[in-house]
Length: 247
Image 1 (tube, rainbow, N blue to C red):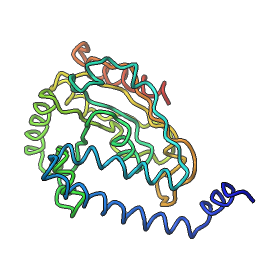
Image 2 (cartoon, one colour):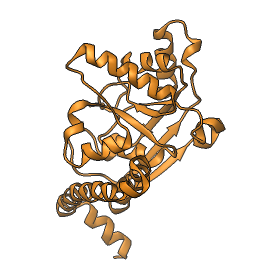
Image 3 (cartoon, rainbow, N blue to C red):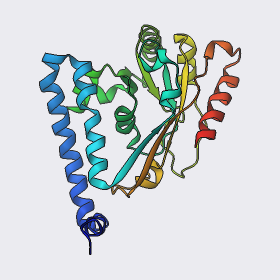
């Protein structure tokens, strides 16, 4: 048997699955530690976005998962250069989606997360360095204030990634889109870039810990200007149509 066949065979074993989970968790710690050590010299944002993407890439390399990116070069130069802030809106197929998008979106783009993550050791600390926007979902009045602050930060130049389904799919199908991200886009007055992740559900579906080999495809669509839509439901329908078409 050739060496490549031996490696592929080993990747299918339960031993490899256990080792990968252990290494995945340990490498999260190492990645966070490296970001924390470099941040005083490079700054939190630069440290996060120069080191953070390496986690997903090395996990994919070990697991035999290939990563493809389509459509980025077709976006306007202002977006590709980071001069025009946007909200990236993607379907949500897997728990791997967040680190994969950090590794594949060429410009810094943060997430909107629940406040509990902020205090998680290492992961929460580096999230704060990256500029993640934390929302207190249990306090409606405070959440509204934080959304307004997020809109100002986005309008001022911060790119954000949102999963409008609100949670990852359990079936592989595209779920309904919630309104919150679209209200934020309208408040911020920035374009929405529709995105699609394809293959994540097969590689790591909900309820599984072991990665399957395959191709993880990230696809960027034509930006949508939310200010041209009088009714929010029409904006939601258009963005969902574009995401579904890419899937």
